[in-house]
Image (cartoon, rainbow, N blue to C red; front, side, top):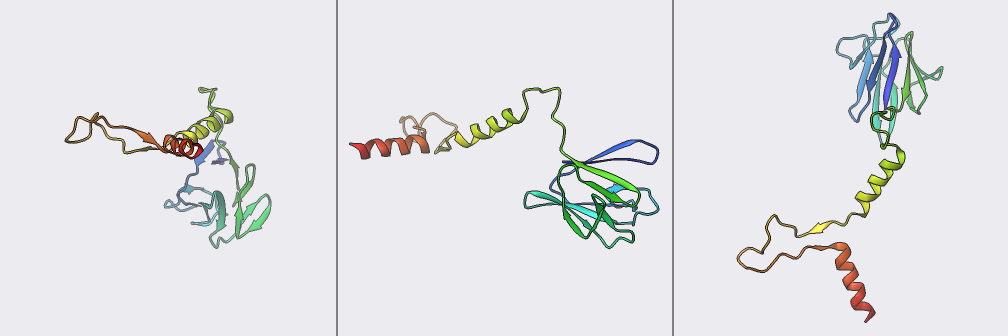
Length: 155
């Protein structure tokens, strides 16, 4: 997710959001610095919590607004407009890369399913035989082990 906004000179700015909380304000110590006389030194914060992003006003003089409503704390949704002083930020999803057209939602979901369905390997070692013997290592996955147990139960 990201915040996108325009500076007074028209320059487009973007700030990528992650799991680390950020502060927005006029102070040079803020993660996102807004040079606006209506913005407090540390105006508000944005944090990721329980799978969602939230904005919290940090006792600013002029308040923090989400979609033109003043808020103390608000859960953010894609497309929300956050007003801080006279600056309006747009909360949006990162665009899908045009360089990698195969990385759409379907491809990402397929990768997730592949990871979930991939059986975990137990007792895997970087050698071909058991230590101190000439017996080869047998790699038994949980799926193979469960299938063998089911086959034994049927007979």
